[in-house]
Length: 430
Ligand code: GLU
Image (tube, rainbow, N blue to C red; front, side, top):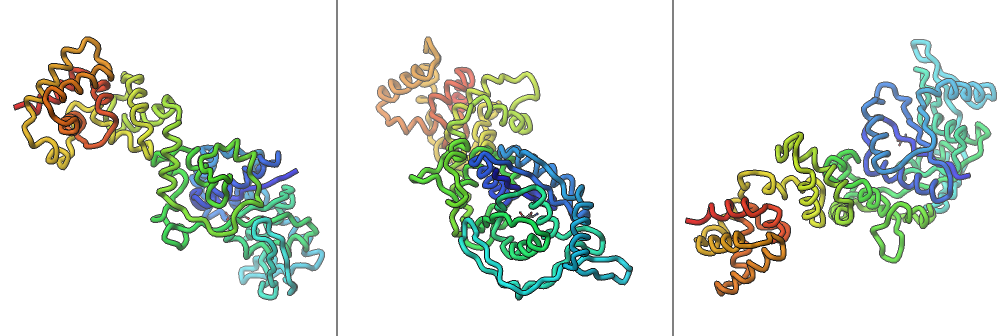
């Protein structure tokens, strides 16, 4: 049975690279009916933080990457000690005493060539000539990464080690340890680097922010997971939007690309919009309500939830992120229209008193205040006035919304309602 693991150190947040590694492990486990193991590499007591651990677990769950087993290396120190003692008995390690009398356990490296068949990169040959003797247990009693990792991968019966390319130099060191301990060597798959759009490693500026930041910035988990998937894998046939269940059916670690991936924020934004378009409106409304409250657009309680849902529906196909919504839809909630000065300058300097007054009269006369009847009234009016639609559409939009862009004008009028539309238009009547 396939057993893979994701092994984050809780010394920082879960970033894009870690998210992709976790996703590919998870997918591979699902694709093969295997197990996805989460191992927290918290051997460094100083640098490991509870907040980071919680954030990592939260982000993984948010991305939908549920695990089958969970281990903490900090609870397994006895085990590492046991294996260090075994190696000591076998004469494969030696000890070194610090001036304070503390003992470190060090592994003797014999020069040799080490070959692996990486599932993604193919044959890789390492020269252990250059590998120095390895500390396995530090003088403070904590195991080193390579040692704990090998003991755990073996004890947890990991069949495939799928991790970032940045660990490639650890692989030969680990193979030597498998051999010394008499453990079976697992398969390896090293995922390519993720570069920023301008080349170079991902940095904060190029999008290497924590997964949790993307959530806060209004990205949908499904969209981000789908985007992470495309960093080094493709479902083929030029497809990009693919749900995880289908990805599970199509995924194979062998199909992961060798070349570095590029993190492209524009592409992620496009992906997020694709998901927002098709997302369940009620669920999106639940997501945006806290932000609406925070921005004082709706009260904490006693707001009209159905109204919020209707407005989310009106905007959702246009949103790049959910966080766009409060700013784009503010005029539906505020008494005073938040006016964009350039929009006002461009469309509301000419006196349109007559036109606005007439339009208000037509709206007042409507028996049924509906999107189609509003549009009909508008079309008839511009025809009668002998003006082009756009000569009125833009000024009316700016007067009602304070902006030059937004959903269809007649929908805007419908959801603002007759009263507020009248009030906002008559403000511009001299
Ligand atoms: N704790 C290591 C890291 O976060 C794990 C590397 C591995 O997967 O072996 O990079």
